[in-house]
Length: 237
Image (cartoon, rainbow, N blue to C red; front, side, top):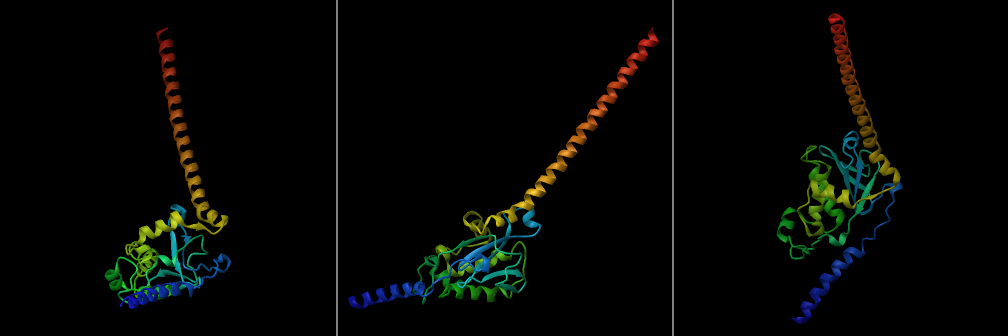
C-alpha cells in the first residue's frame, strides 16, 4: 500500500515536471513579433492620445504568436491589431493549473475551475478561449480585448486565481509590463504630451486675452472718470 502511494506521488510529480520540461520557449523577439507566453500591449489611436495608460492587449501562444480579440466574432492570430507591441510581460507557466484529471488540480479552485473549463497546456487554454470568443460580439466596455485575455487567464487559473477581469489585466500590464524599446515609450506618450501642450497653450492664450480685455476695460473706465472729473472742474471754474 505504501509503495503504491509513493508511486502515485512520484507519477504525479513526474507528470508535472514533464509538462514544463517538454515546452521549451524561444527567446522573446520583438523584431519578429514573437512573445512566448506573454501579455502584450499597444496604444490605441485617439483613445491613448487622451489617456496613455489605455491600450489594446493580447495574449501569446507558446510559439510567440499573438492572439487578440479585435472585433465581433473575430480573433487576430499573429497579426496584432493597432500596431506593433509597445509593452509586454512574460507569464510563468508554473503558476498555471494544468490538471490531467479532475483530482489533479494544483489550484484551490478545483470545482470552479473544472466548471469554467480547464486545459492541459497553455495553448490548449488559449484555443478554448478563441473558440468561445469567436461567437462573442465586441463591446468597448463589457466585452473587449481585456475580456478575452482575462478569459484565457481564468482557464489557466493563473496565479491560483479565477478572478481575472478587465481591471486587473490592465493593471498587470500597466504596473509590471516592460517596454520593448525607447521608441515604444515615445510612441505611447508623445501624442498625449503634444495634445496637453497645445491645450495648455490655447488655454493660456485665452487667459491672457481675457486679462488683457479686463485691463483695457479698466483703462477705459479710468479714462472716462478722469475726463468727467476734468470737465466738472472746468465747468465749476
